[in-house]
Length: 146
Image 1 (tube, rainbow, N blue to C red):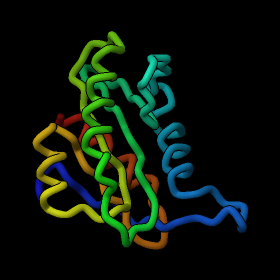
Image 2 (image 1 turned 60 degrees about the vertical axis):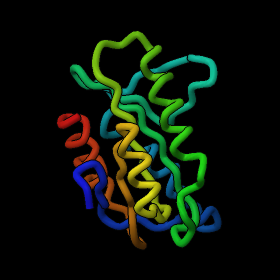
Image 3 (image 1 turned 90 degrees about the vertical axis):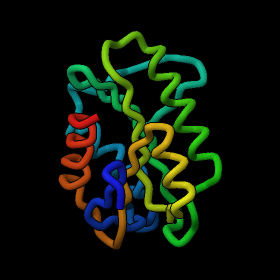
C-alpha cells in the first residue's frame, strides 16, 4: 500500500431501521465533533465537499463516499475529487489544498494510481464496527504531512 492510502479501523453500514446513523452520516458527525473549530463553512456554487478543515497552512477538502463495500469505487470519484480540489482553492484560505477521499468501496490499482497522481489522499474504512478516533488520527496525520 502506498504512503497516500491508508485503511482505518473497521467500519460497517448502519441501519435506519435500528435508529442509528448510516456510515456516511456517522463519519461526517465524528469529523465535526473532532475538528469542530477547524471546520470552514463555505458557500460557493458547485462546491459541496462533506467537510473542509483548515489547519495552519493546510486545507483538507474531504469527500465521504460510502455504499456497498463489495462494489468498486464509482467511476466519477476522481473527477469529483479534482473538482473539489479546484473549488477549495477558491475559498481564499491560506495554505495548500489536500483532497481526501474517505471510502469503504473497493479501489483497484488503476483507480488508486489515478487518484494519487492527482494528489488525492485515500482513507479506506473497513469492517463491521467504526473507530472514529482512528479515522480522525489518520486524517490529522495526512493533513500534517501533506
